Structure formats: structure tokens, C-alpha cells
Image (cartoon, rainbow, N blue to C red):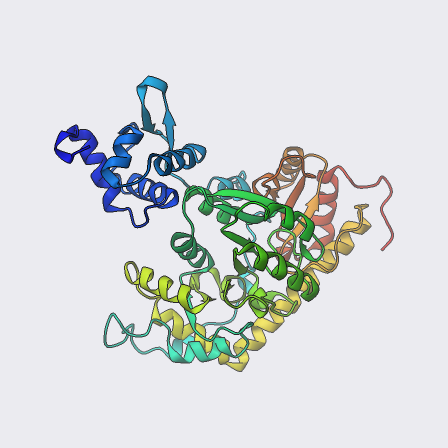
Length: 459
């Protein structure tokens, strides 16, 4: 249909979509519509033109438009009302729904074990790092290298995998968000661990992708379940290679090699979030060893050096790194070079490195002490090989357990926000790294769980 015969409202809608259309595919069209929705160009209630009209105006086939509409409908972004046409759904803005459910417990509390944060007393002293700062000045240009050479050298010293080009981002979630924006489109299928990290699930669902949860065992993602999930076209597999949040499971080298074979055959991208970083006792591991051309590896420094540093490092295949850098130039451009200098000092200063090593040992000791105390309180045996600051605690009823703990002045995160599949065993995520008095906490956890034996077990 010729543009001058379009209704003015339809012309405005189509112009908003066409401005954002970078690929003439169903995925590209769905992405353009979602982009226009986020920008406010297609507010809730906007009526979309008929499929044939969209196809004619954008030089697409009706089949392509229909497939895009199906993708958007499945993601809840649009709704067809019969003769009323297809309209943009009046949905609330995407947000951290799962995350708020996980850590938004009642307050105040004597001890909050719901957050998964590090113990502030175990973070490295910043005085030496700040003593080396003179000004907050950056480089000579806004287009200078985004990563300071001294930080790049410190990161490369123990970076796993073959990639040599490293990026620095404003935390791990910023890195995950950047990868999702560049690689994924609405309607894409994405595999996540189940249980998973709730903010990541929130982030991906906000982008309109379809999440498929794959269960885990004590070596990482279950390969049989992953193979079944990968039978459908899959854009990416997101996983945590060590000290997985919430379970604490670390992937073995044997499992990593097997997962790499499955992902290679499926042609998917692997995105690894090493969220525990230097507080994990397990050595770093990456599928980039087997899949260098399709693996993104992210390392967070929040647990080891402080959440408020807001820094993470990322490596990726060269082509993807170029796309990520170009996309970042449209936004913040680089992460604070002041904070980069601080992190570079913390990674190279012997005293700071010793403090991080001591924190790692303390977290491991606290976790084992809590496991021993739980066993003494009558709880069934739990995984002593798990790593990191969290404990994945089975319970009979999550809501009851959370309420019982709250009555004792303790907070723990319910397991439901971490789950993607129904019918899983109820759990709580407990930040074991914050527990300094394990006996008292273990008694409260065992009672709240509803799983403790009548007679305490002997340790």
C-alpha cells in the first residue's frame, strides 16, 4: 500500500517500527517493535496496522510479519482482540520481579541471610589503593582505550581460556545485559540453569526471550536434559561455572567438555557468569577452552572486592567483542577509570591479595561449620563439596520455613524465585558466608525446615 494512503496513526506506528528495523526477519521485526515500545513510541494500547499493511510498507512477507506477531504475542507484548485488531499490551514496565521475591523479606531482622552479599568485614582494605590516586581525571579523550593497561595485565595473569582481549563493565549484570542486548532478540530460546540467578531471569524475560530451565547435578548442568533442551533452536546457554548461585555447585572439567560438545552441535552461544570469582575455592574453568569462538566469560569482583566497586571483566570471541564495544560507545563508553585503578591495585598488592585469600578460607570454613551444625541439629546430609557464600537448604514448605525464621529474627530467601520449572523440591537460599555463630543459626534453620530428625545426629 502506498504511504500516502495510510491512516496517519498507522503511518506513525510504521515509521516508529521502520526506524528501528535492522533485519528484515521475524526476529528483527519483533525486536524493532519491542524497541519502539521501550522508547515510548508504541505506548500500551497502541493499535498495530493489519499484517498485510505492515508487510507492504516494510517490504516484508506477510508470513514474516505473522511470525513476528506470534513471537510478540507469546512474550505478552501484544494481544489480538479479534475485530478489535492487534494492540500493544498494557503491561507494567519490566523489573526485578524474581529478585524482589528472593530478597524482599520482612524487616527488621537480627540476621539477614537472604541477600547473598559478602561480609563487609572480609573485604580488602582500600586505604592503600586510594592512597595511590591523585585525581579523578581520565584519559586524554572520551575515545581512549576503555580498559587501563595495568588492570588488563592484572586480569590476564589468571584469566581462563584463550581470549586475550578483555572488557571491563559496571558489574556482572551490566555485562550480561550488554551481551543480551547485542545477541538476543524477542522470541529467542535461552537455556538457564535451574535453579538460576533471579536477576538474570528477570533481565532476560524483560527482553522477551523464552527461558528453558535445565536441572543440575553435582557436576553442573545435566547433559541429558541439556541435549533435550537443545533439540529446539537455541540462541544461548547461560551458566555459572563455579560456586553456582544458589546451589554452590562447581562444574567439573569432565562435564565442561561434554557440555561443550552438545553446545557446539547446537550452534548456541555460551555465556558464563563466574559470580563468586576469587572467593571460590574451586579453580576457574571455562568452556572457551573447547569453544573459543562461541563462549563469553564474565568474572565478577563483587564478592571478593566489594559490590560497590561495580566492576566485572569479560572476554568474548573477537567479532562479538567488537559488537559489544561498539554498542557500549553508544552509552557509558567505559567503566570508571578511577575504580579500575583501585581494582588494579587490589589485584596486584600483596597485602590485598592476602586479605582476599583469607576471606576465601573464612567463607569455606563458615560454610563447613554451618553444615556440621546442621547435621548435629538433625538435618539430612548436605553437599559438602559445594562452594561459595551460599547454602541451598531443602525444606518441607518454603513459606512456612521463611515465616518461622522471621519469627526468630532471621531472613532467608525462598527457593521459588530461583526456579524455572514447577514441582521442584522446596528450598531456601541461605547466605552461609555471613554466619559467625553456626550452632544457633543451624538450630533455627533445622526447626524451620521441617526436615530435622527428632534426635540430633552425631557429628
